[in-house]
Image (cartoon, rainbow, N blue to C red; front, side, top):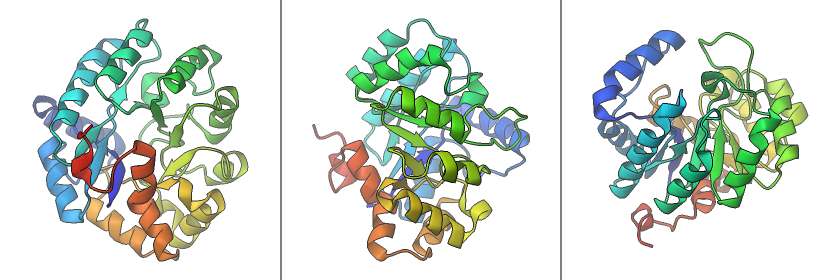
Amino acid sequence: MVIDIHTHAFPDALAERAVAQLASVAQVPPHTNGTCAGLRTSSRQAGIDLSVIMPIATKPSQVRSINTWAAQVNAATDGLLCFGTLHPQQEDWAAEIERMVATGIKGVKFHADYQGFFVDDAALFPLYRALAAAGLIVLHHAGVDIGLPPPVHCPPERLARALDAVPELTVIAAHMGGYAQWEEVERYLVGRDLYFDTSYSLADLGAERMAALMSAHGTARILFGTDSPWGDQSAEVAAIRALPLAAEEKAAILGGNAARLLGLAEKPCALHAH
């Protein structure tokens, strides 16, 4: 079972405009058209059983509609799973957490650069504690975001402070803990009780350093991710399989670890069986 823990897709009416705008900012060409159908096609071609969509609300008014769409994606049981979103400035986050739990959403994506907060802001700790109490996973964009100016709002040192403050929260740090901040990842995060995803990191790290970083952190805490449409899913699967790691470690990274984290059975079709 292969699971891509970090992808992006948008409602059909918004996809073309959203992908064009994001591609222009980052100067990175997309590998899909940004729709769920495009992501499904890409996933099938790559041999990926389940792709997890990570939406981002850039303002509080978007949260409810995005989470409604996420629940609709999840109800389709067709190889896609969608996390929810929250915005730190929204006032009704407690009610929205309850709504996400009620609709079966498994986690929340935060992007501190796009959402305008620092990951270790103490004002967010009650929100993090509520997410932990609800059993929801949190995925943070971590490190530099291509195309966005400084400061970096979720660097490894700040993320480590947030982990210290709310150790009970299950956290995935995207981009191997902090894109383009690898020394800080090694200093502050390696060996900590959190997951790294592999998205958009291998080209920058190189295979040898990527494998070394995975091994240092513990391959049981590494999750395969592509950042599709910004990463090519087929190429990323092949790159992970080519890493100098044991076969069982690569199998765990490509899907076993994520299946366990998400509480999935061996087959993706069991996702909504309960």
